[in-house]
Amino acid sequence: MQLQMVEAGQGPALILLHGLFGSARNWGGVQKALAQHYRVIAMDLRNHGASPHAAGMDYAAQASDVAETMAVLGIGRAIVLGHSMGGKTAMMLALTRPDLVERLIVADIAPRPYPPSLRAVVAALQALPLHPGLTRQEADQALRSAVPEAPIRSFLLQNLRFESAPPSWRIGLAEIAAAMPEIEAFAPPQAAPFEGPALAMAGALSPYIRPEDHAAFRALFPRIDFVSIARAGHWLHAENPEGFMAALRDFLSY
Image 1 (spheres, rainbow, N blue to C red):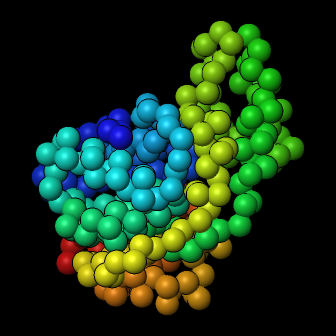
Image 2: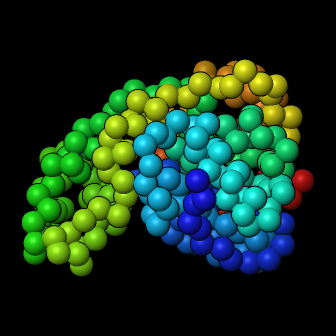
């Protein structure tokens, strides 16, 4: 599947892959900063943003989408940075198509399955009453019990077209709901480890990458380095952009 994307800058190719319920535009500040030195392509993963909707979201399929889009763009090799679900996609791409990945950066996700903690959020989104005239305030209130954090509700509601009559989802919500077991999972392929430079970036306040995950990372990515971003949780590039960019520049400079 060819993905939609936002491109900026010139130079070596650098690909940005967002997380669940995100889109290419989530990388706005990061993309702008990196575009001073790189050709930065922020992709909308399948069922997200402006990309097509399709059944199945296993990471082999998502990595194949990225590879196909790179081919369409004439990119033979790139630095690949992925956050959360996009980080798993980036890892799968590096393991299945190492010829395409110059360097790998994984932001706050480990190469393992995660518990189904987001299924309640998916159910709450599916339960929203999409009636004509629905306001953002009404939708926010309807999500409050399932999603108590106001910034996360705001992030999720970026995916709802309030201008439609009735409002409609920009994301493939039904496809995402059906694919949650695949999104939560991660099954590394029976392939050789990725031997290129790699970096795992963890939010210091996030539980997504634990010290006991380091061995699994090293088994798949022997040259991996680890860095913790202070004062940041799971959305580390939004919560501490200065620390995130400093760690990223350090990794890209050697």
